[in-house]
Length: 133
Ligand SMILES: [Ca+2]
Ligand SMILES: [Ca+2]
View 1 (tube, helix red, strand yellow):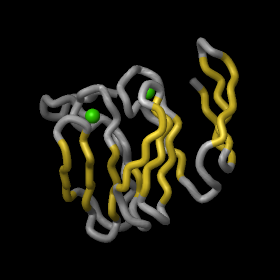
View 2: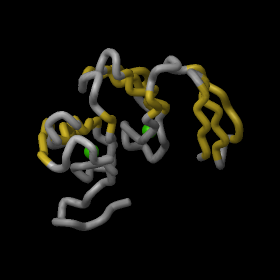
View 3: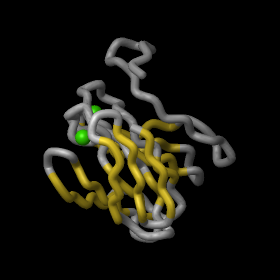
């Protein structure tokens, strides 16, 4: 699936279902599409820094909103617990912590990085250091 996000419009060219457009979010949101419900299809989603809210349009579960993060956080969603569902997560430059709301293992905080670092999220297998993506 190729997705282009412009303001609050999502234009999607899906490999099987073709073109579609969805209005979701606002112009200040940060697009964070990923598979949050674990059905193998990416879900339209945005992170709204002003509220610390994650707004999602999940493929199988519909609309969801989750409050997780503060204005200065950087969204770093990925599957950190390896269950096939993307986990909501943020990197907080002020303390170098990664705060994760893992779908199976729950809340976790990991101190890794400094304020000027650029976080690069990617899912890890439960075995130490194995790449999933
Ligand atoms: Ca999905
Ligand atoms: Ca997960």
